[in-house]
Length: 221
Image (cartoon, rainbow, N blue to C red; front, side, top):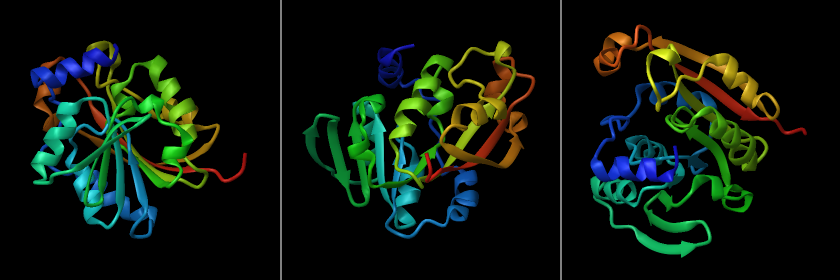
């Protein structure tokens, strides 16, 4: 799976992963992070998620990164915003109000552009990646976030042999193993989803749950 895979899905409108409402689990658990208003929140593999608009409405500055220019365009159009644009070594930047989206490769972002991010929100990034890229995502990209960074991670869990990802199943043991070196991980909630997601049941799944974790990058080390 390479960049063209995702670009093609956006071109063809095969974006069943896009949610048409703000994720209720975000609304429920985000306040527990205790972030001051104005904190900058990093949203990797952002798509055109409405969660970004919700975070901005809470008073946060949002920095998203998304590979597809169509996704970026559709996000701002959907919000009724006309962004200003500029280019950098990271890609093309689009910004309006409290939201900035970089159209480019998330893995190419460096510590400098992420330095001001006090938090990270991952609803669909880790589970979009196969195992080899999940390792790079945590060991490289997440490692560029500042010490003390807080965040929420949302995953899916299902019998991987029953369905070919993405989205991929990422269980609690994997989350803890991948983040153990630099992050404290706390499971906040696990919720059964199969009854409310008939599309996944139609693809052959016999079980489907979502899990929400609180992350905090340790100050030491």
